[in-house]
Amino acid sequence: MIIDTTEVQDINSFSRLESLKEVYGIIGMFLPILTLVLGITIGVLVIVWLEREISAGIQQRIGPEYAGPLGILQALADGTKLIFKENLFPSRGDIRLFSIGPSIAVISILLSYSVIPFSYHFVLSDLNIGVFLWIAISSIAPIGLLMSGYGSNNKYSFLGGLRAAAQSISYEIPLTLCVLSISLLSNSSSTVDIVEAQSKYGFWGWNLWRQPIGFFVFLISSLAECERLPFDLPEAEEELVAGYQTEYSGIKFGLFYVASYLNLLVSSLFVTVLYLGGWNISIPYIFVPELFEINKVGRVFGTTIGIFITLAKTYLFLFISITTRWTLPRLRIDQLLNLGWKFLLPISLGNLLLTTSFQLISL
Image 1 (cartoon, one colour):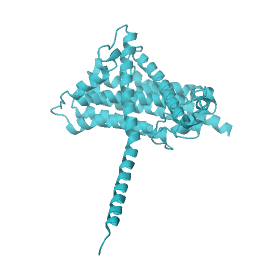
Image 2 (cartoon, one colour; image 1 turned 45 degrees about the vertical axis):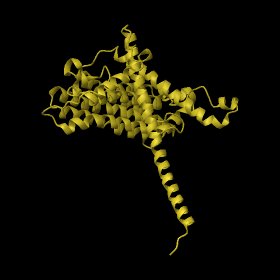
Image 3 (cartoon, one colour; image 1 turned 90 degrees about the vertical axis):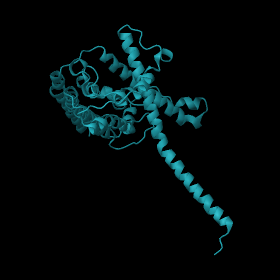
Image 4 (cartoon, helix red, strand yellow; image 1 turned 120 degrees about the vertical axis):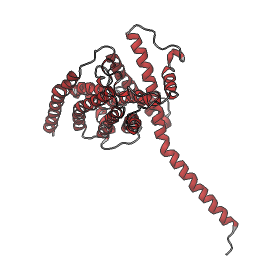
């Protein structure tokens, strides 16, 4: 059987074309994820720098100034130092739990970013259960902290891990009830639908004005979920040395550091999405491309403006949480649990009942 050389060349070129399509498909799948991870990394570096500058301003200090212009590279320098430090393991601890704990804490928080809409059609995955996926995933992070505390074979670490689990359970319930109220108002659990429901009425349509009680409960609960002062009981230096991260060094210690700031950023983004109208602002910006006759880039321009607005609102909330850290003293563990179970839980339940009643009346 004789096969023509042109047929062989056609088959080879077709197979090359198919393999190129597969490669481009894989690149197209991973490119949005890598872009999001890069953006999150830069966001965390900016938060670390902002926290140091704001805390220096509050305490009348100079703050970071040597690593890069205005000390902007200080967080990068600290991260590089931790990467090259030696990883130490406790001699009588559970090495597997000790090693897996930090990874679980970081990965569970990173997955939460997949449902956050940064702008119109600029979201990794628009799911119908977006907000509840975030709550479900974020409740995995304390398991990692508990594993770290138990695997360290240290009473201070174990106590810090137990505190993290107790604190997460206490404040997860009011947080979920507040999110339920928002879902009832928006008739959806999708993050994109919640933002679009707020955009119908402009500035006064934000859920901040329609759910003021829920906003304050969500604010306090999210600070407690992030383990920020005055709720940083799991890693209280004066009581527990450094809590669940006492025995850690090197890159594993750095992962806990990154996880706390990732959690703070994701909580701030969800406050923006759920209560502050997301990428929408009361001043319309759609007319600007038409004014300059650049209709072709109107969508790109709108997306860029939407990302900028979302990040501006997010960093406003971050400023509030950073200022709170250097303003309020730490609570005792009994005060922390009393606040969660005896105050925030009944208030959030009452808020949910009120929202449900108003929704039923309006039908």
